[in-house]
View 1 (cartoon, one colour):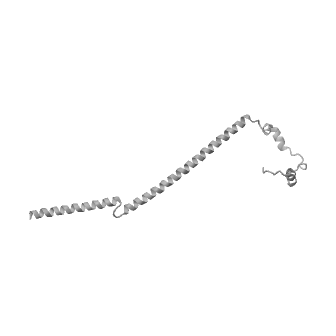
View 2 (tube, one colour; view 1 turned 45 degrees about the vertical axis):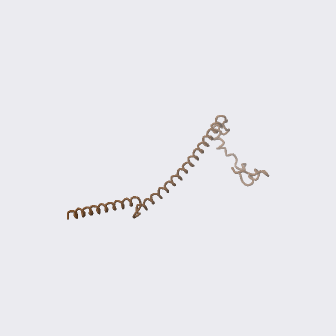
View 3 (cartoon, helix red, strand yellow; view 1 turned 60 degrees about the vertical axis):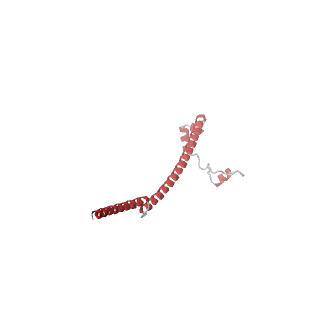
Length: 139
């Protein structure tokens, strides 16, 4: 009887250990993506989202680099124009308009003269200004 009790005790102990082992293996399979598959689907979704985000990141980086290059080109062109303008300002004479004094400008503005003598830019005057064979450029 005593041997039988020890044997039953060992069998129940082994069965408890076996059940615990099965539960642990089931958990391990679930964590690895085997078994019910619920975690596997979530992992796949996250992987797909990561790929999408990486491709968007690369696209944004390329776009940023393109805009950065355009900005650098625009700044270089602006600097070129500034240097060109500064060179003209130093060696350029002031225009006749700038040389004219303030009273002269005011006198020219206020001098209406006889309106009947002035000819406007009507069709007759425009036709007189156009020379044959020379195209008229817009102002």
